[in-house]
Amino acid sequence: MPNQESSSNQEISNPLRKPLTLPCGALLKNRIIKACMSDSLGECGCPTKPQIRLYERWAEGGVGLSCVGEVQVDPRYPEKPGNLVPTITTDTVPTDDEKSSPNGLFRELTRRATINGAHLWAQLGHAGALTHLPVNPVPKGPSPLNVPGLSCEGMSLEEIQSLPRKYAATAQRSKELGFTGVLIHAGHGFLLSQFLSPLFNKRNDDYGGPIDRRCRLILEIIQAVRKVVGPTFPVGIRLNSTDQLEGGLIQEEALEAVRLLDTTSIDLIDISGGTYFPGAKSAGDGKGEGPYFLEFARRARALTNKPLVLTGGFKKRHQALEVLNSDTVDAVGIARALALNPSLATDWMANSNAMTTNVDPTFPRFQETVPGGITAWFTMHLTALGEDRENIFDMGLATALGEYEERDAQRTLEWRQHFSMSN
Image (cartoon, rainbow, N blue to C red; front, side, top):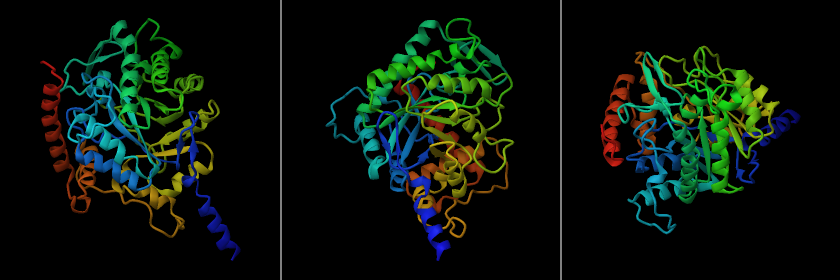
C-alpha cells in the first residue's frame, strides 16, 4: 500500500501539469509547449482551414501553448510561401465576421486555437539570407555572403534600423487579431540568428563585432515590441545555443546573449540550436537519445531567472519529466512528437504509470533515404492532421517530398502575385 500511495502522489505532482506564471503575469496552464514548426499551410500570408483545424486539435489535445511558425514581419523575405503575414490585414475592427476575409481567417485561427485555456503565440521572423529563393532571389543578411549554396546582399544601416518598427507592427497586429503572445525568432539561422552569428555578421558598426553589439538589434526589437503590446502581453524569444557550424555562434557567446536578455522585459527564453544553412548538421546530428542542448540549459539557468524552455529531442514522457524535475528549465518544447499525436499533452499529463502505459508516440522508420524527405513527410502529416485524415495517411519520403515541393511551387506563384513582387 505505501508503494501505491507513493506512486500515486508522484503522478499527481506530475510537473507537466503545473501552471507557469510568466513575468508579465500571464498564466500558462501547464508546461507543455507545441514548439514552432513551419507547417507551410498558409496561403498568401493568411491562415487556411486545415491550418486552423490543426491548431485547434493541439488545443483540444491539452497543450498549454502553441507557437505558430513562421509569422513574417516582411513578406519580401519569407522562410516559405506557406508563412503567415498578419500585417496584410489592416482592418482593426474586432467585429469582422467575414470568415473568408484575411481578418476573419486570422480571428478564426486565434479563436479556435485558444480553446481549453491554451495560449497561441505568433513566432515573429524574417528569413534574411535564408529567404526562400523562388519567392525572392535576392535575399539580404547582416553582411554580404557568397559561399557554396548560399549568397546574399548586406543590409544597409537604414534597413536594419527599420526592423524594430516592423517587428513591433507585426506584434501589435498579432495582438489585435487574437494571438495571446509573440515569440521573437532568433534561432535556426534566420535573420536575428544571423546577426548573432560571426559567420553571417561581419559588420564593423554598432551591429557587429563583439557579442554585445551583435545582440543590439535583438534588444532594440524587444524594446520596440514591448512598447506597443504593453506590460501584460507575453513576449518570448527563441535563441540558438549554438549554430553547429564552423565559425558560427558558439555556446559561450550564446550564454552572454542570455545574460543580456535577462536585463530586458522578455517573458520566456526558448532554447534551441542548429541552422538551415546548406550542409549544416541538423539539431539532432551526433546526439544520443534524449533532449538536445540540455547542458547549455543548465548553464543558462545560472545566468537568468527568466522562464526557460528547452526544445528538441523530447520523444518520450519520462524525458520531459526528468528534465522538469531537475528544475533546469520551466517548460518543454515539443515538435515532431506532437506532429504524430496532437493529443500527446493529455496523454503525458494523465495519472498513469509511464513505465507500464504506452503514452509515447511511435516514430516512423523509412527504408529509403531522400534528402529533405523526413521534413517533407512531417509537414505533409501536419496537413493530414489539419484535414482529419491522419488515419489514412500513407506516404513514402519521395512521395511526400514531391507533394510538398509541388505545393510550395504553386504557393510561391500566389505569394509573388499577392504581394506584387516583380522578377
